[in-house]
Image (cartoon, rainbow, N blue to C red; front, side):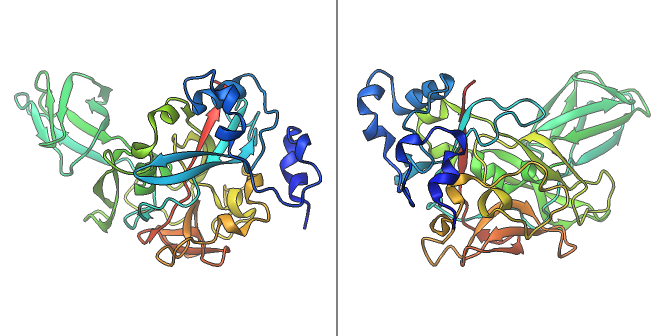
Length: 359
């Protein structure tokens, strides 16, 4: 097997640990205590180091301890500038961290329909009616059109599912309300909401009469991962731009394979793809492998993929599977540190990750 340090020296910043076959990692808060004393906290310090492009004596595998929700984690460096220069908008200097296995709870990637969706609701004006009630509990509205023209002359009460216009739409005017959604399944998934402590709409397991996915609401605003992180860390986390698959149809037919891919913001907290963790794809390789690389931390290190407890039989990675011809199969890292597929509605562990960047 290749020398581990050969792998983590790809950025040219780890010269002081050459000659090791295995590197356990250092507690950066202890190693640089004197330097950190000049900053408000350790996270402000690492942000300043990245901004200055100063990675001296900072290595893949090093970590910063933190407490989240009453549990202790080590935020461990997965890669330094792993994606520098990539993206539809250039990615600048950065360090990507993982918290390892999230120990508070397992999570579903979906409720059974791992698809992108943006529900629409159609009405017809009568010249006097101003209030229109949606069929589903929609968290947020993306767009409203009246007679084909976008309007902002309305209010929306999510508690009553009611759109109220400032003045009544004209008789026979076509009214279309589009809920906030996405072509990217990850961005409308319970997994995304759990990682980023959000309340969103997600495709439900049941189908509507027209064959489209029902709408479920997930609310992790007082839970999930981001909610429990220290405020000092939240202040410096950057959103990650990643190339991920789309699985979306604007019609009534639910897609059973990826329909494209693109660069998009995947959130402040995310999970690795199959390639990023395992260096391979068992799930969908359609539109998947054009931009991913394996993070140096995971090269030859099964300990990062083996479950810590028997209650977590594997963990999710951010890779849907086309192999089953289904809209709810998802790739996950199994108990033996190998990739397999699983129903997205099952509960699995996750490995939350985050980025601190130059800007």
